[in-house]
Amino acid sequence: MKRRSFLSMSAAAGATLWLPRAVRAQPAAHTAMQLPALRAGFGNLLILVELKGGNDGLNTVIPFADPAYYRLRKKIGIKREHVIQLDGRTALHPSLEPLMPLWQSRQLAIIQGVGYAQPNLSHFRSGEIWDTASHADEYLRDGWLTRAFRSAPLPAGFGVDGVVIGNAEMGPLANGTRTRALLNPTQPPGTPKTMTYDGGRTKPMPRAPQLTTSFPCSAFGASIETAMHMLHADYMPRAEAGKSGGVAAIRLTLNGFDTHRNQPYRHRSLLKQLAEGLTAMRSALIELGRWNDTLVMTYGEFGRHPRENDSNGTDHGTSAPHFMMGGRVLGGLHGAPPELGRLDGHGNLPVAVDFRRLYATVLARWWGLDAAAILRQQFAPLPLLRA
Image 1 (cartoon, one colour):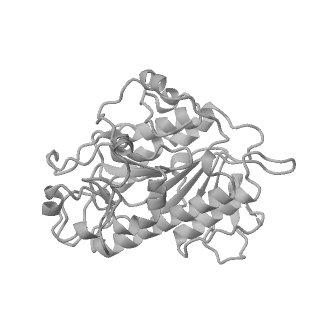
Image 2: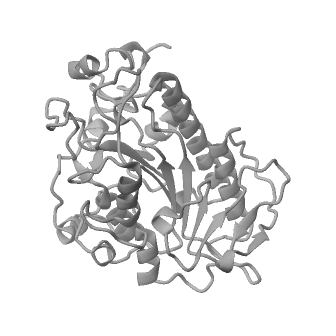
Image 3: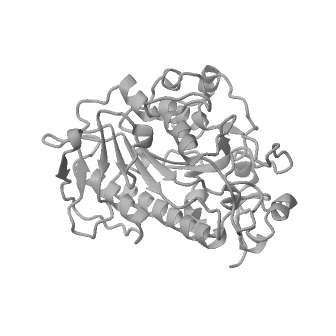
């Protein structure tokens, strides 16, 4: 694959992509004063995409200009001639090429260095920390979205608070009283989908008119297709009489990122599924007239270790980049690039952005809620959304 460069963007536009490094959060009130007024409320939809297993951030958003990257990854590093160059030092994995129209239209934000202090490298425990927005040394019962919907109940026209698709675990919607899980989103076309309700009861989802968008032939693609048809059927945010109402949050999962062995092929396939799935999701949301009031955000329990292991893979690590996309996303590079010269005593990357700042962006800026009360501490929202 030939090297791709997108440096033709104007210098003025490029200068806006980089923000000052902020390891410590600024006071939320100070940040809010500098942000333009935003159309907030539960008419805005959140779609969370979980990268289950811990995505390798260094081979996703690649610091190709840093010689340390290739010293640490002699076998699995992505060659410079193959990367999709974003600027003079940062590039994307070639499998993410379907996302480039989003990047060029500045509707894709990449937040680098996302993690938390005193990281835990257990899948279960770190996933629990992300799901509940807890500190590393505290244990919370409810998901952060559950606390959000408890603090500000959705309008009566909404059928449910949130829906989980493609994973039996409720994650950030854990212990919610108005949350649902789809049981068979990957069934063959034409097979009625079912949804769990209180008490373990199930009922078929209503059939929806077909969308013209084509979805990838994968479990992740099937989950996205189910979510889009659900929005198209009877969970529209502005419900008509007789409809069961809208939904404020959807959580999807892409499994398989625990790449301890044979990472190059596996990671290439996973990122291809991610890019093609997100691209199809955007097309469907535009078709549904929902692109401008939908925020899509990736998350995961941790990243991977900067140094490759002896099995042509990577072990559990700390911080990693994450994506946000949508019609009102302020695209570009945010956070701070990985500092491979400042690895900690275990050889892991430092954290540039506490993950709860992403949540504060959703809670305060996207929905207009009291993020400090829900997260039990002030975390400054990131300037990622346009009015």
